[in-house]
Picture 1: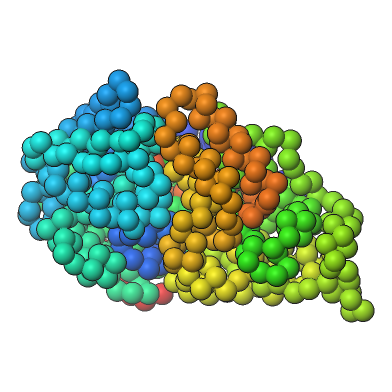
Picture 2: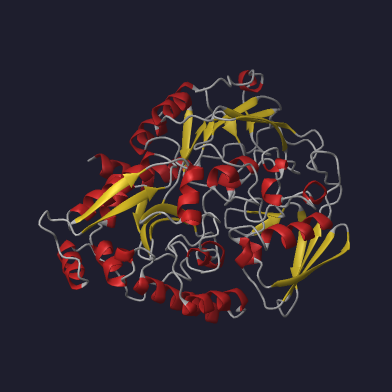
Length: 544
């Protein structure tokens, strides 16, 4: 009954809450105050240009500005770039940068920073942008405020990935000539955004302070941001309910608590601000493992899993069954080509028998390890459900837990796993968020959030390359449909559910309508509507 109630809330009452999540219209913003937010899990690094993990993106969105932001309809709007234009043949993108912008250390922000970051970071290190900017052959900087990207072929995905999370610009003067991956500014970031990094007490809190020289005059309104690390889910709910914390994203409380919190007068709950993500949860099968090399085995495991149960029971209705790595929210690209894996344990057992993995005397066919992304109890419950589902068809599973750094090294570096559960953002174009799950280039290079399965298919690599350079929208859509057909047949990854994240925030916290990428956006336009909140002392930053 709870699952049905939560599902209804996610689909109806939640939408009403979301519609009222931006009550700042016609009110004069108040200046001052400390906003206390939850960040969970704690980031492993504070530079999204190096690591695109969600916690890093949440914090650094207020430290770094993007070249663009995205409105609620995912259209790019000016940020560090005031305007831009694409040549008629699609092979030149010119960005006109905002004048007078300074890095937090006082140095001017210029086109040289963009050029250096694109050439040395996005094309060489960034998990997604190595593909997104692959067609950029050179970068011209005719003056300090003009950047010209020259492409070998058109790349329509670039404008879908120029915000502070998709393409974070780093200060050239602090990184050039250094070991980029180990530069100390990765954890003491210097950005151009509305808030300046002040302190990181690991395991406790991260503090940002108002940037007095911010280019948007009069902003930000808040004086300080404190991100608290609160590992315990019940404690996060209590902190929000008591008003000790005023903001938390990415479904920060247990799903069973969400309905109760949504009814409290001092809180708002919204699913807005995640449109840019199009998040999907999936299981990576390590195709280099003996039992998982055979596609027939992977297909059998798929049919042992009831994705409706994962959606309604494990995720309390804050998800919908996924049937493709390209979420249904990307309607132009989404297509299963009729290749589906309905819940059918008997068919799963028959396939395993055909593959030569019959039940032993103890009823067990083989044993696997399941590792889940350590982002909360919902992911752990997903792993535990898979364990139970696989046991019914004679496959024993061990669920293993570890912190984020150990998880990413195990999956993307050491490749010491059988099944890994994680989520990717597909973003507004599958070239940005989906291709990375199947391209063979990053395998084993310890690049988080790329191809974890170890899947290598020259046909898929060719399709991925083609999507990056095809300018004809219809042909490009067909390429993605062809890609889905191949990977859904080979099944190196099993799409589980499309996620519906939510944000919990204080009712007296005001801001404009959330942008499509608000989860990774800044607090530039946030303010408290009462003097008591505005004059509040900084939140307690003691250890939790």
